[in-house]
Image 1 (tube, rainbow, N blue to C red):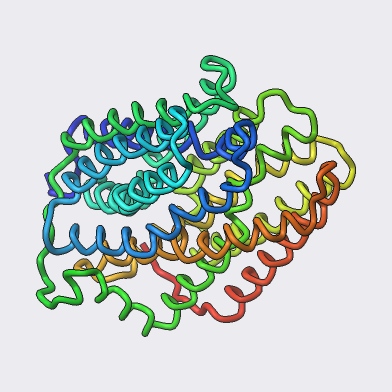
Image 2: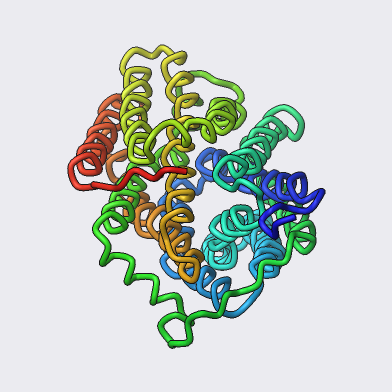
Length: 402
């Protein structure tokens, strides 16, 4: 039996780690805007969503470097999850006990620092140990989708905490579960092929920008992530404005379509070029935002439901395809740092700029009575259309025969 073939039990274990890992942000991210507004902290929404991107400017890259050269990836994953659990509970506890919101922001910042590398690490571990990584990875990655869906359902219908700090405490429990299970993941040792101080800090990964296709992929990912942050910041708020009584659970409808996309993605990767899948992800994202814009214009909530549902397909087609692309094309010693750079663009630079831009655009377009949502979403749809055109024109790529 080849080493690439995974041991019995590895697949379900990876799936469970992804499940609890996806459940944690599913508890608190979609409901955060409504929670802060409900407690008179609306002025802190921008800063709350800016903390994770600021942390992600360095966290995923250094985490990828550690996995490449210093520590076993599964151990970094486990300890990052456990430390993240402590910090997310501290963050929401600070608000719950009436401390100044700055303590909440500090907690979210530290939480994001220790949690930033985890998505890239899970991709590295999965793609290394699954027999057919490109086909099987979406099947384990979908566990995170189910976790997010379960969290949204629990917040709205079990815990009744759409406007409560309980969402943060629940996220901490999910993080602990992910961290404990991660200790039992297959051993994924560092390759240790790089010895320079730049590699040790994760800075060596930036040499990937010398390759035109890598540079285009990373740059477009960063630009795409600017408008994408609006989904997490304002989708639940628009549901609430349109009269929905369970906004957190409603946002999780995106994960239903993401499940379907995950199951189909493996087969699609064998049939279509990766560039084609990336282009579809961007193109459908522009359509998805336009649909939410029409919901704001017409007041018909079904259009927002449909747009949010389409979000799951868009996310899978673009970001999961990008992770597999890097695993397929980048040299083994750089794979962890490549995933870290993708995280830097998609969770750091892009969302950091996006949190500021989208909050200002929201203030400019949407008035106190809830009018103007169409302009907000349509501007963002236009930005995604520009990303679509840039990828189509600048990325060349090569056709890989399996």
